[in-house]
Length: 66
Image 1 (cartoon, rainbow, N blue to C red):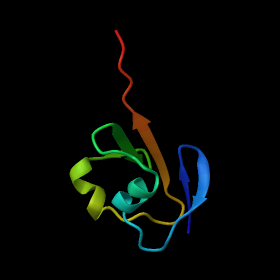
Image 2 (cartoon, one colour; image 1 turned 180 degrees about the horizontal axis):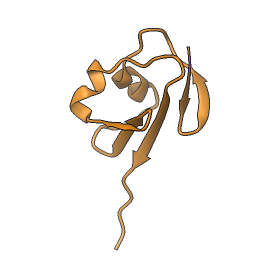
Image 3 (spheres, helix red, strand yellow; image 1 turned 90 degrees about the vertical axis):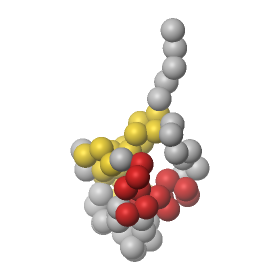
Image 4 (tube, helix red, strand yellow; image 1 turned 30 degrees about the horizontal axis):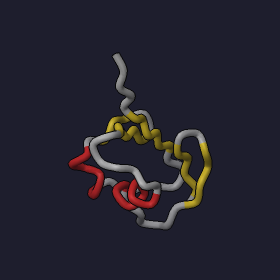
């Protein structure tokens, strides 16, 4: 299936969970906000959220500064 992650099209396995995608992208929990189809997905739901063909996923990293 085809999904979009941060504006880039990529192929994903059928029945892939959001947590699996994040693991394959080397995303560390606690340092990103995940938005799927313009809806924020809480970290507790990552392993229960199935990715569907055509999903648009944004990974938003925290940036510190002062």
